[in-house]
Image 1 (cartoon, rainbow, N blue to C red):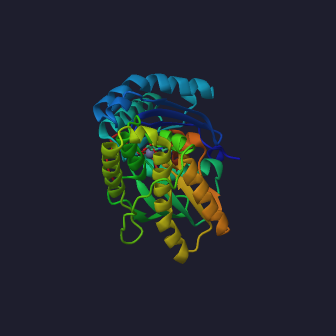
Image 2 (image 1 turned 180 degrees about the vertical axis):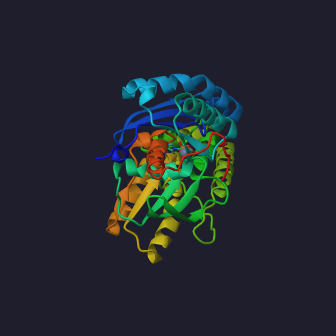
Image 3 (image 1 turned 120 degrees about the vertical axis):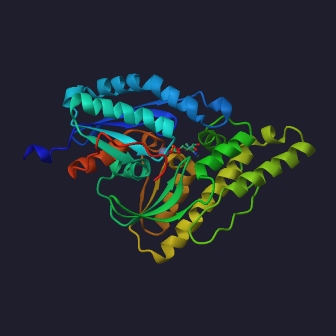
Length: 337
Ligand code: KG4
Ligand code: ZN
């Protein structure tokens, strides 16, 4: 076998939002996926971009060294350096891009620019390298909510998207209304386990086509809590678990509506979840059941690869390396595509 058929040894960097992550891929396996989570944002109820970029600066070198050490790989072995080009917070992206460029320059190795959203979907290929196509992926994160028809590994068509807030943003903003620290998604998931999902109901936002809207739910919850608190002080705290279960059930049911409509007229081999919100236990269960009812394959990344991580960046980079899709040193970060 000639050497170019061997999977490359790659280093990948992800800094698009508030997680500093570095992964090392060797012989087709992710040997390290080290992530430093920033906790400074919880008291602000959301990511503060200026603080995020400063924390990336503080964490970058340490996370990089730790990833190499954990993988047992020396920097001389690396064959390319991959990084998240966007979308994301510009200041945060810049830290990763600059670090990647200096490494590539210092080691005289090529650079690979990766689209963060493609990477969330590619996280599925870590577990299932060759799934049956086409499948429908519900991509749900703190910044995006999309239904994506995946025809081949990197052949995508976005069928629907949110017109305002993302699903993760809805979880986080509603969490904030309830006094739950940022990011609220995972805690709502946890509290919901001991709550009644039918305790409270909210109206679904009607949006044409396969699109979503989440800002109405946030407003409904806000007014509902204000009214209840006036009549019954301490309501939010007392009914925290029921509120979490009801909000989570609402979001999950709503997310699956367009998926079910798409399934009616699109022949599919499978359903998939990706992005930070794919860590949600209710959503994983609901989507898995929907797939099963229709005899479809169901895919979801392991928890480690649901929220932002460099492993998924390495997974895209592996394909790009094979196609020699390298970026020039003049490449720049992009907040949007
Ligand atoms: O993909 P991600 O790490 O970052 C973005 O690219 O946005 O997604 C982060 C989002 C946050 O909104 C967080 O609250 C949400 O994913 N999230 C969850 C859960 N774990 C993370 N939402 C609901 N349930 C969870 N278990
Ligand atoms: Zn993400």
